[in-house]
Every structure is written in structure tokens, then in C-alpha cells.
Image (cartoon, rainbow, N blue to C red; front, top):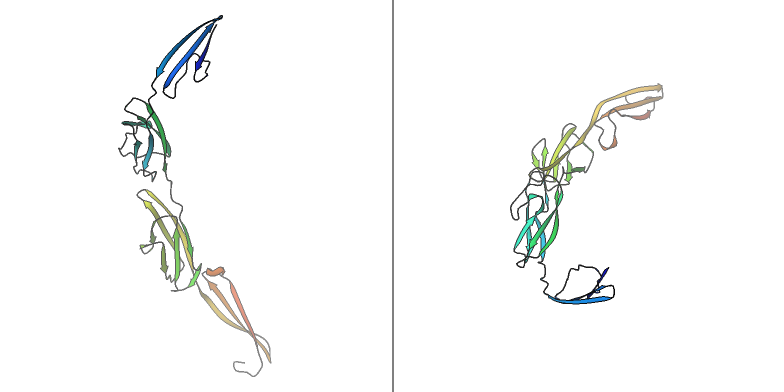
Length: 239
């Protein structure tokens, strides 16, 4: 059986892949007999290759451009992508570019393109409820531009003055086809009814004010009743 010994690597396989230029010597043994051969190898360096995406994050249906960088003379991409030509990725994915140097050597690099889903928009308010016509500031987050309805107001922060409980819809966007929306209700508080009842005995009349609230903003549930009681001595006005 043949045995192999390569120098200067010390490898004992029949085949090796030289990684640096130099003189390589192999000694082959067969039942005590040996033979030696030498070869001078010039190892050409692979090109430097980088993978670039502009932009690396897109909205559904929008395009990106993949380009290879480095010192290669040509670049080819996986997935049918053409270097420097815009394309619209269907989903988030990783693309590999192979660069070929002037000496025919190759190297690879990868880049990931993210396809965003719907944006998650959130809204906060300075108060969950206001009096009729009172101001409330609504603040949206999660996008770069915002449009509010009703009213068509734009911007992350708006001031509203609802005269009745109103639900606002805000749509946020980071670019074409990259949007999200949510709703927020501003409760308008008020007094639905207010009556005064009188009870008790002479000299100890009890007046009770019964108010029924509306709106529920600020933690006041719709229909809550408030009782204000006072003892009015007999003989006082309204007795």
C-alpha cells in the first residue's frame, strides 16, 4: 500500500490543496521502497469580496439593490439577482455574492435583506377623558409619518377638542406599502342628569343631589352616580 508524506505541510493524504506559494515535496513509500517528487507552486490570492444591500430593509413591494464590493472583476448573485439591478424581494432572505478575480480565483460574501411587515402603531394621551370641547393631546409612535382621522391632521402629536366621545384613527408610514394603523377613543365627560331630593323630618331635612355622569373618561364609568348630601336645619331657606 502506498503512503504519502508532504513537506512542508506534513500531510499524509494523496492530495493536498496548497494555501501559500512555495516548493512542495511528496515522498511516496511502497513496501519499503520510496520515491520523491518536488513542485514549485504559485498560489494566487482570492479576491476581496463584500456584499452590500441598499437599502437592507424594505417595505413589501419596494425594491433594493445588491452590489458586490472589493477587488473582484465580476460578481454573480444567488437567487437570480443581477448585480446593481433593482429588485423587489418577496420575503426576508440572505443572498450570496461570488466575486471572481482577474486570476480566476473566487470568494464569496453574504447579506440579508429584511422585508418589513405591517407597522405596530401605538397612541397615548395626556388624559383618557375631557370635558366637552376641552383639549387633549394624542401622541403616536411606531412610524415616521402619521395621518389622523377624522380631521386629516398630520404629525406624531395632535391636539383635539372633541365635543362628544370620539374615536380617532391614526395611520403611520415608513414609506410606500409600509404602514400600520390603530384607533384611540377620547371620552367626553359630562352630567347627564342632576336632581335634588329632600327627605328627613322637620328640623332635620336632608337634601341629596344625585348626578349621573356620562363619558367615562378619567376613570369615571358611564352612568356612575354621585350623591351629595347635606343636612339643612328647619326654618332655613327652602325648608
